[in-house]
Image 1 (cartoon, rainbow, N blue to C red):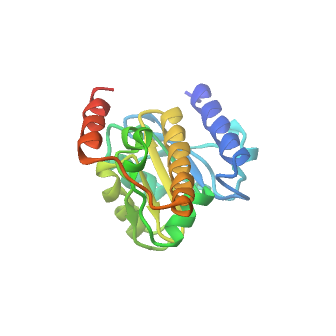
Image 2: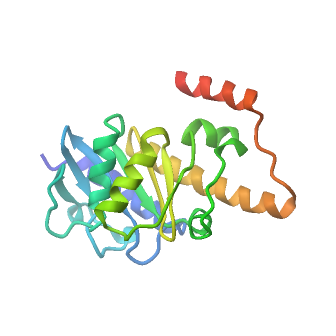
Length: 206
């Protein structure tokens, strides 16, 4: 099988990430599950805005294929930790990355939509990109969240499908932007525990 639908989906998301400035040059990577332990992933050194379906690489869980991004280890660890998710988007969106570079986590409780979609926004302490150490740290952080910030690096979001992983990436960047502007406008006021609790109950029913 050549997984035409999945290949087209990754190409489309790559173009969307690049058009929105969530990745530049050859930054970022995307993967999607196409079998129990089989995935399609973006290659190293290719602009996500110029991806072609034939560029995508088929990989087996735990086995690094030739030409795939060095950050594939992070994808492997996340899939192993979260069998419920089927797609991963790693981007360097400006506002989210700025918070990561400042060493500041984001509060998902600031926006109802962010809390429902993302659950939380943990900050993962710095480890070299592409390293097993970073992969394990990110996978651990995502056990109870659908996105994470990586210090001095960028962000990663997961989803039950490729579209959801992209929407979570967009929601994270929107939350980061609103958070930054709210700090300029005054002191941000997160949702009360009662309101946040009600939203979490709703999110579990979705």
